[in-house]
Image: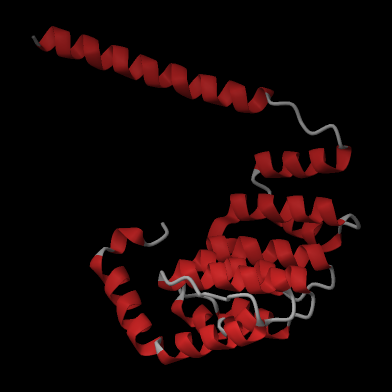
Length: 215
């Protein structure tokens, strides 16, 4: 019996070793991107070079490369990248601000939305504002609700839709925006009147099962 157990242990260990080798070889054999600039970012990512990726985000003249570097930085550094991402929320490049919002919303612990809220209030570009609204919804922090509610009547439909989806994701309630500005104002008034009950339900939901929190 002991011999059988030992045999199974050896076989199991051998299988795990083979799997590790296969994963390593598969990863190392994946070809780099045909675009040489993107390929440089991929090499930095595979090397785990957070410093090199951060520099590429800041200084690369191509926004698509800077955004790819930012995604790689978030993957490599995870929550250690939050300070860098926060600074990028005010970057002069539109697509970089939008990408930074998405990465920040994904990485930040639930409720750590102060930088997103501040950026949302200051942002003038509707594409970035919609991206920040999506990030607030992704983070699901309660402090994102208050700035999102007025945005349900934003002049830009993309921002309104993103704000409504974010409110739904945070509170579980889908705002009924209707078809007219008057409908939107009624939806906003209804949500404002229910803030206390929504917060009670929000707290009950998250306190009931801490496993819902992002790891």
